[in-house]
Amino acid sequence: MQNNKIRLAIAGINGRMGQNILKILNTNKVNNILLNGVTEHKLSIKNKNKILYKSNFLKIKPNLIDIKDKFEILIDFTNPLTTLENINFCKKYKKKIVIGTTGFTEKQKLIINKISKNIAIVLSSNFSQGINYLLKIIENFTKILCKNKEINNLDIDIIEKHHKKKKDLPSGTALSLKDTITNICEKINIFKKITCHSIRAADLYGEHNILFSFIGEQIELTHKASNRISFAKGAINAAIWLHNKEIGIYNMHDVLGI
Image (cartoon, rainbow, N blue to C red; front, side):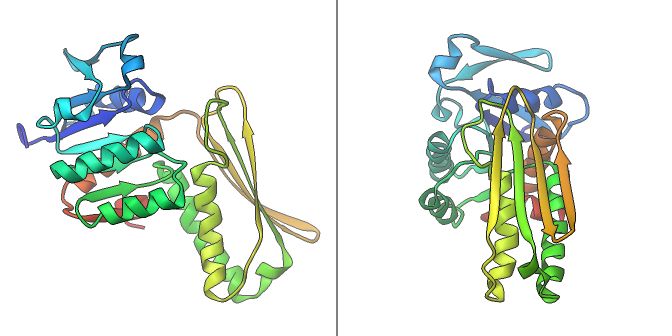
């Protein structure tokens, strides 16, 4: 650790999340982190080859190997293939990693879980505290519905909205909401169909609606993001929390203690 600060690197610094994380780190509100390295795909570097961090410029590198001695924790919001390359790098060089990438296949998830036997990982489909509290609410509500056998008498729909450049569909958060419900149902041998509806339009930051429809009435739970700052703050908090962990795979429920 340099100057008693956590040495951080960001993969995908020119992306939406990379830029929002940088914006927060450039304020005086985060004093225990030192951004010491950033990477971006070679094609992107041609357009922007350095970033301003505090009062200094950091040169953007195309590969983690170029900054391997400069960081101890990596924040990665890139794409599944790049993230898998980065996580294997972290395993080789004993780095910790916060993963916000979504759209992994089941096989890719198994690889990440296997690597967590060697390094510490926070993996989350959504780093906002609001969504993670909502997931906990959904979990408890589903348990009540299952206990009272009401789960069989309603339809469940998840409607998610994101910007039109988002590639995975449905969103990782929508799948997390769906999995939260189905996992509880399956524990008592109830196999509930949940339908996900996806909208990709303009520059929407992210909205998730969960509808529990009974005959004659409906319960709707909604989370709306007005910007990406809440996701960026969550990723930074996850990196700080992860600093004291050696191995294992964690999520934002662990970070938030819920």
